[in-house]
Image 1 (cartoon, one colour):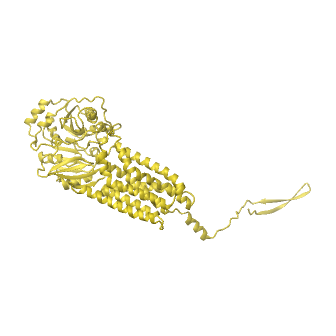
Image 2: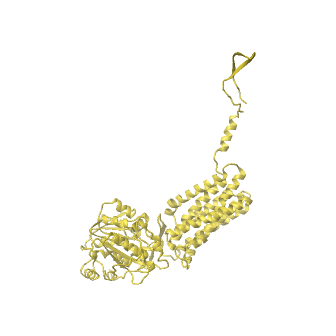
Image 3: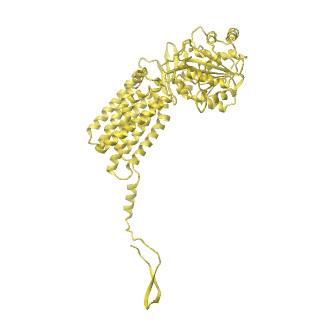
Length: 556
């Protein structure tokens, strides 16, 4: 209906008839029923976004799923490393497991969606986390020896450990969407998946920035298990005695698993200190008077507690070879990129009248070095907690020697291996300055791919590159690549003469005997910022055990 206002303007004769002209003013008032204010307020309240109990469970499931994914990376690192193949396997397995859970959960939800069923699924996922807590490390150690190509090896243990709980977590969202549709109308599915995604975001940031830097892997696993039990309790009806009893049982399993895992890592172990840093698993262990720093399961520094001034690892002695390759054996300024146990930096400070800068990206490594490896900062030993390449970008200092000691047996920061990085390093050398890169690789064969690629890369920037393996056998080992700015190559005979005549404070006859030149690079790639397949090159030495040579007590 509409209300029309009109007025009589006059009469007009037409064909003898009078017609009245009605002019509509065009003012229209819709006649709409007016609702009481209280009804409008109630309607606004009803339309306001709310989070149901099922929504809370979805959020918690999202937190747990992404948290477990990041946790998987830390759990696998000591056994399988943390390179691109490991993380690619983790992401792929978790996505596949969640997709399977969404699909099966959606089919089942259409038939049997209920709060009790949803609670049972969450409790099942929590039981899976309990299994990860108690069996994770021993299972991964057992799987390390499987006759599977190294790049694919992580897929099997990830699937076995994390697949079942992740599939069950995938059930939660379709169950929640079905339950919300049964109780309300509108955008139930969108709300459910938005909550799950927000939970995943919280899980990613919370695990990365809060949990991993603060507590160990076992405790983080316990936290996610308890979260899932809490989510189950949130949706369990009061009358559902079966699920309430199941929650108590799963809680007991989680606590028991945590206790067993904790006892298993402490009883009879030589561990002095262990933590998860923002970058790696860190452990300090004592064995027969030798204190060793392990990063993701590999040794990265050692201290003889009775003779703190001696090198424990053979490769550390090779850091002094540049003093024989330089025309001037004196070094005033030295840079180490990578701190580890700081054995090299400490020795250079004590042995020579040199100022040493150490750049270490992990602040926890620096703290542990100070507390457990007798490292003391001073005017001659300065520690910079940052990325090595960023440091070189920002500093204007020059050095007589730059030691790149940031590579590992399973991975290397690719931005510290490239032509561009080596050019940057060269700009920070004095006229007679030298760069030493501590590469971990085999000497020849398929397993030498990274070593040969790094040799060829350094040779693109420096006129002369030398190679010094640290072991006679062709196993995965530390190989020192030394690049000089002098075009004239020093012969082995000349190097042997300098070793006899120059007093560098350490015996170098054995390192000199490992002299290599003209390494056959073959088809090894030149590593560049836009193409540095370091992970692929390192995986070529899969199956070869990395053993660090111990230094002889009489050599230094």
